[in-house]
Length: 301
Image (cartoon, rainbow, N blue to C red; front, side, top):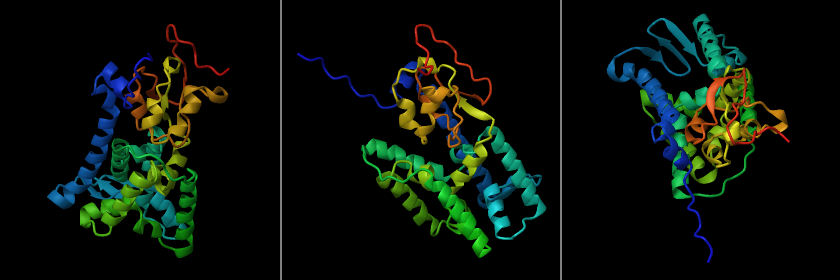
């Protein structure tokens, strides 16, 4: 008589059993606190008259001292021959420096309000057991980025920001949602029924822009204990950009134990979800694998 089939555990079950629920969701909870906290700072003024931050994600002024500007919007402005004010250029430089330190696509996972919508769509997709997905090449987002820059150049306007779901969501929370509801619903339904991580992972030009900044960023996800990997595949299941994991995890072509791929969002879910503590935040330097007793190294053969 054959042995009973081993139950299939939901991704993260091993991590929760080994580390506890809180440790297995630490970076996820911090991301949600960051996203909602940033939104609250922008909304305190219009909603409650507490003006800590004035403006929106395109340009803001914090405590009447610190200017911050989206370098993607500034790039479109320059191509549209609309020279921004000096304060906006200074704000863009500050933001560029920030994301060179923490990782360009950290914007997507730690700041962007649309990420809340797409993450919920993915969570619901998993809970409903929806399978199958349309195929759109991930580089499509770079074509989308190029298209928005060409449109700005040809039209002399920042046309993309009129339909950008990120900008629409932020404007909508302050001035009233209007058409923004329809755009956000379309993004949600697309990710839920048509394509896993479809918008953020394959189409969004904002993410494509910040991934280019991430090419040079200092903060990276490292794999100091990659030899402890038990091939549970949980990290691949939860990662919004799973293609970035394998080279560092399996030392493909001698890759060091650090994720250098530009599309990593530094979301930290792989760190949360790993019961063997393979992953950790660090810098792109000093990529040392810590030997694990009784476990063969993951060096390439």
